[in-house]
Length: 630
Picture 1 (tube, helix red, strand yellow):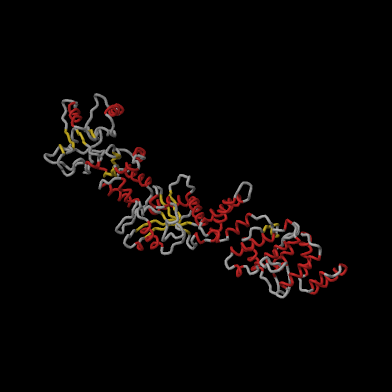
Picture 2: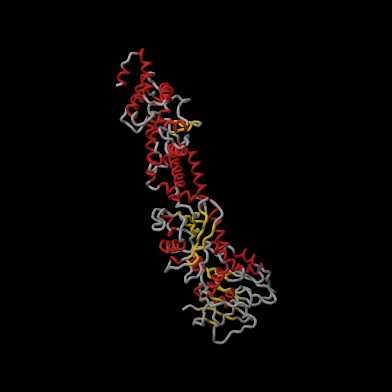
């Protein structure tokens, strides 16, 4: 009724009636001033006439529910009243769409914050107040935080800390709120940073798991570098359901059957309780081979699963969306760099423990034991530091040397030895820490250079320490000679005496099949040795005096066997022309005295043997030993 009467009063009485109207109802004194300063100046309002209409409608809707009316009563979520339409009708074009933007921000906050009514009980009031205060010219637009707090304060005090928390949640989950000095203001254009923050807080936008997948990619990058970078480690980041379905959501290249010879590092996403039991069962169920090669990288104690860490997920989401939205000239490229840097920094501090298998129990995997070491490096240095820890703290040289010596006594191939070391040792024996094929091969060669074993390179060449040769010289001569791949199947480990460099060594029985069916011609047995009658002393070509062995086999195998008076000279298998060149380089001429000459021929036919015998010098005696194939 008052609204109708006021609209029919005479113009001369308008000012007086206006004053009476304002004094008759419980409006906050600053509300009319606010409307005059901001709405009237920024819009096309017809002075106080339109302002009174707005105030009257505001009172009719909320006057009975509140002791005082403020800017916070301009609600965006109530379409029943005409306040919004009245404001829109007098708004200029620059503010016409601001209400819609404010409403979208209100919805964004409601979707992003769980139990929003409990966490932000004054959401509608704060958004409404800021929206109204943003309808103004630039120098008056927006509000200080304390002004918003006054607006929402009615008959109950609003705690400062509670209000600060509510306002922070609103700002972080809105994308049209801008900061202008200390003032907050709604603007039609989006705030890129606010939009990223608000989007990242909306769980519904990431129900496809894209944020978790991106987080795993970033963990892989921080630890092992990009896919294009040459590396020694094969980093696999386990998924959320890593204990039951570890490979389900991973790329095929991350599955164990696709792993190459790089050291496999499996990153566990959560801090594991009962580590021995959990990792033991996991290893049995989800790894079918190479169980001893895996290195488990674990997060710091007391941290939550990385896929449940709100801070990591929020940074992942913001980086992911900034990457998606960036374009030349916009701000999202800078924001991507900013948030990606923060994310990688936090990931770099996350993982600080290494676990490798120590005791294996296939029947009772819960009884397995793992060695756990702390890593004191961060980011890209973690894996190198972990490798150093394995080499220095977990790899026991004495166990490895004993294992290799046993393999040599059994004439095992290097390939067989490597395959055995890739698996945990059975029967409660402590496993030998896996260092990688290259590192293990180097250690095998080191043992050879130290004179502890000998190595047959497919029967074509033997690696062993020469008489008087230092370890350094032997290592320089041998390093890089083992080869890789299938050649290791024919590379045989031997006890040192099997390929002697001094006259005191004897050659073991290995079987011709391990040396490519070698045949040997040996002339003049070593001093002090005579050929036994009717027996074969167990030689490399026909162990155990099997049929087909012809003659007596003395022990030396080098081209020139050492003597007490001279030096030992050796040449690997090569052509006769090259051997002539070797003798010249050794200073052997027509008058040189040669003793204990041994020539070894890998295989030849009967015609070649007859020709070789016919060309032997007259006046010398020769002893022949070879193996005749059936």
